[in-house]
Length: 336
Image 1 (cartoon, helix red, strand yellow):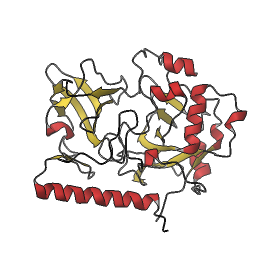
Image 2 (cartoon, helix red, strand yellow):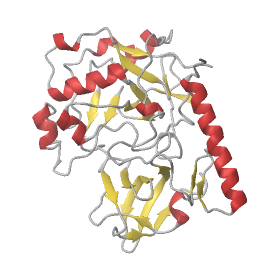
Image 3 (cartoon, helix red, strand yellow):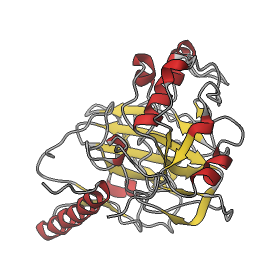
Image 4 (cartoon, one colour):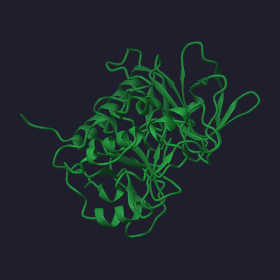
């Protein structure tokens, strides 16, 4: 039996999406968004064969949901790149200021007009019609102004960048409307083109102590002008020789025995996910390396919320220092 590489599966997936778009246009089906990055959302008259959930988004073949294969090769640049990423002996947990607020919507959720302030990146993804945004929804307080609304019935994820509530409508600098059951890599919600929902550590995952997906990472040393699959673009600005390309997959050395370490439940879950699934660099950040977490409703100031506190994360930007970050590795770019 011939084994198809995950990189090739992604290519086939992209070709299939292009074919679906062509058929939709031919049949007169409404195209919801088409951006310069090539991301599309199509109102499909037939129910999708795979239906994702807000708790477990994206298709099982998504890079976010696929474990690192045994024997995965390391990038020759791994020592230099990871030396900068771990130069502070910390990887920061973005729990409050840049925590991701994630809301769910249904048929009763209020609909709002959403206007995009950036016009140079193509049509506003939210111009398709009224967008479901729950009453009381608000973006995080960080400069990204990020917010996600998941509509399981429509199988769509509405993802906002620099969003703000106006008197009679919402404004957002830009964002994306991504298929909930897709690959998790489309649109302009993040610098690399990853879904804003992709890779975010969820409160429920910390509560149960298991994270079954790759993590969303940010770095202040993301390369300018180059990226690698599954990224579809980059907002990196670094010209340093040890920069990390957006789309790069990092992992914690799988030979590390976590049972020998004194780890809190949260630190153990994060370390285990880093070993099994790794993490993708999806955006520029303010630190050498940080991880996206869901914003808890009871978070305030630097307090991340009771769920995080009980699991061992006591404040925003926890450095996750019990994890031996000197064992971080950069995986080689997949070919074939």
